[in-house]
Length: 287
Image 1 (tube, one colour):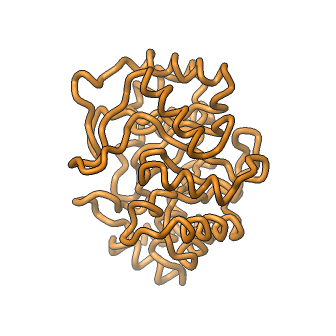
Image 2 (spheres, one colour):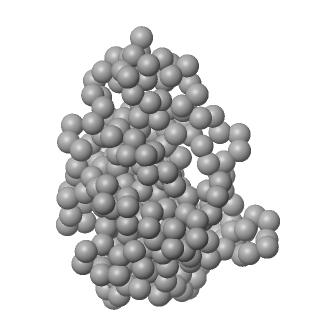
């Protein structure tokens, strides 16, 4: 299976980088440190970075803008709309699901990223956990939200539309809008998104599983702690994390991963997951 795929007019490595760690990790790097990390991960071969305006109140986007000031030489930047950061609140995010708010947040991403157009914008639906759940007054029909994003695409403010945290029914409804990627929870310990993956596979839509190793929210089991994953990693002389990532890559040839880390050695390890023999991974997990 190839370690690259054709996406949005580019040839991308299937393992990218999730930038949330730059604002929500165990430690928070300074602006200069974040810029250095971003430049270093790009030098390692990362050409797809996932971000959001609500990561650190736009601080992550601003670091990306400084790290890659020329859009023509930048990795593909994917961002999300549908929520906003409210400092001091618990939880710190609030829903922003109305079509008008989606437009405002696209414009905010353009400003903080220093771009005239966004490569890829995911609509993050907030219908259920994990994460915040939209109140009744923040529940809008998917059709209205997609209509606004399609208009933004026609205006040239965004190039591609993706969906995040959606059901199989919602993805089916959205197909006519030209969805190119779906970012849903999916990993070795949580396969509830399998029906969504099947629709993505049937329509050639990129599959971007978040929480690929099961971490990120309290109460979620870590893939790297599964005894069969640990045993398989030992047999293959790789890390448990690489086994978990390689398993995801093997599910579908248009899978793109966005693991995040502040440790460049860990980033190298994640990138190397694409080189693990996937047939051997499946055989080892079955033993």
